[in-house]
Length: 398
Image (cartoon, rainbow, N blue to C red; front, side):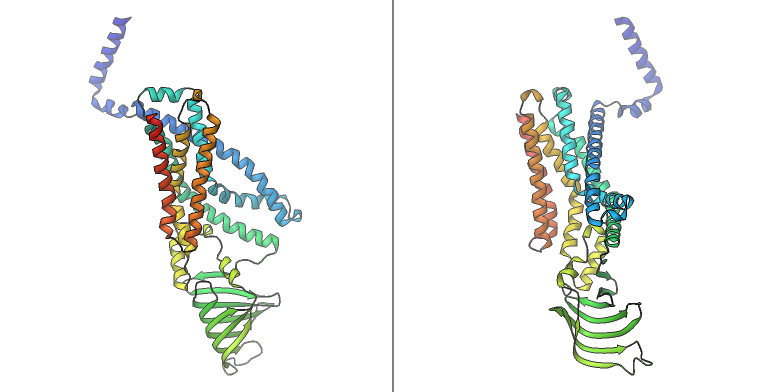
């Protein structure tokens, strides 16, 4: 048998020689044990991530449907409730992505430890960092794909969700819009509506410059127009300066009937909080359109701190997912016979939540302008990666 194996091996060598070095080069990468091991661990991680994602979808969707039913009532029907829940689902999933990656990492390495595969990998000379490399790369790819594909989907579904919820609930839609022509606002009651356009404004939208007020009746017919050099919102009214008023309805010649006022007070249903909140969540703007939208806000006079911080947060999200993998690996890349598995899992989850909480707290600091948006977005995930890498190195030495 030994001779036969030798002969077969020799024949195989001769066939490889005759086949040339090209075949060996073509199959060398696929036959590399290191590459095979990386692909195996990556597949296991993707499978665990898919299972965690499916479980959470099955949990989140019925809960969200119950919440939508409470919001719009049972008169709208089951399909309206289901459509609202489905529209709101991508926004909920992308917010929980760090948790999904953390749980997938725990499932992966606990499974490898339970079957002693991790012991074999370590005995073969693979360090802890090299073993964690493939899930880290997969997490980075998941983060990049979420940024490129899921983020625009979330922006689209979030806008549609807000519009559908406003329509089914009988609420007003967004009050403010920013375009290349300036800032647009809408105010009024059931009997009349006023559309306001301003070329510029202050940071909270309560001080308008070069403002025009267009008033429409209940039938949507323009009744009058007001132009003012400045308009200041305070105590439920606009105080206009250097005003010209054109009576449109019932006037044969609006220009001839126009009036000039040094100051004029116009009642308003708007507040500073409504104007600020009417921009909506920055997640309703696709990541590719966000820089242009921020420029429009800056041109209109708004600081756009929330949008700038959100943009940097989204760019740094792949690093956060990689940090979640490293944190999970640092607590679970040990054999289950050492015990305390539950404590280690709980420690990993608590540390992961601590990093997310720190990132959310830093986001608030960025939105209020106390810290640079770039600093608050990139510092927590980088610090978490360094901390988890140190934990893995400590595990390796142990």
